[in-house]
Image 1: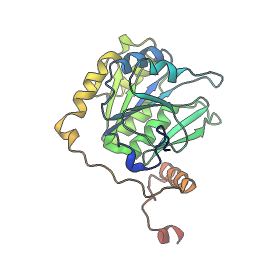
Image 2: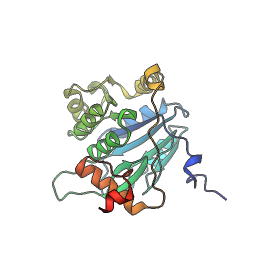
Image 3: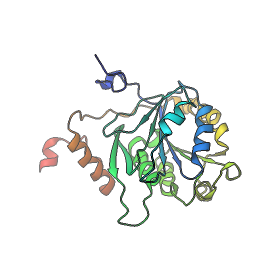
Image 4: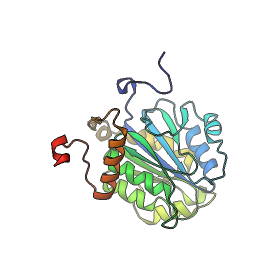
Length: 246
């Protein structure tokens, strides 16, 4: 019997029309609950939530957000393909990235100073989904997410930021707004209406799907290609094998 949570074939998986990366930190739970309580279950979008979590924190986010949305809420796992109408949550002690529609986990790296998981994910989302990427910055302290939204805008994606006055902690929203890159600045309970309006725009509806990855079980090669793209800004996935071996 096929596992309903992990379909065995990519053919069975609906491709999201947009990939929404949601960054949140202090005060983010309330904002996330407001955001998802207004989002319809069948929007066609996928939501990947990157929240600052203490390494010792026992996350109850799956259970908490499941009470606020009819969408399936999952904790991200290595190699998990992102599906439409599903919410994915970053696990504690991990950074998250996306490569050809699949989630990759890595250990949080504090050796070079402050770890910025929202930037890490949003930058990979910009590389992977270009104009199908949407970045959302919610309540939090600091400036995590600023580099990520820059990458998304450069790739042709859209940016939405929580209004400062509606945020319990306005550091992250204020830093994001100060870039001048936000397409919409709203309280979280109003974001769903604007998102739905955006994706229904005729230009958005005319987007052409990117080709699916040619890799299947070659997970090690996938990770190598993801690292190469991050370091060199070149995607080697579709190069001929002979070109890679030369």
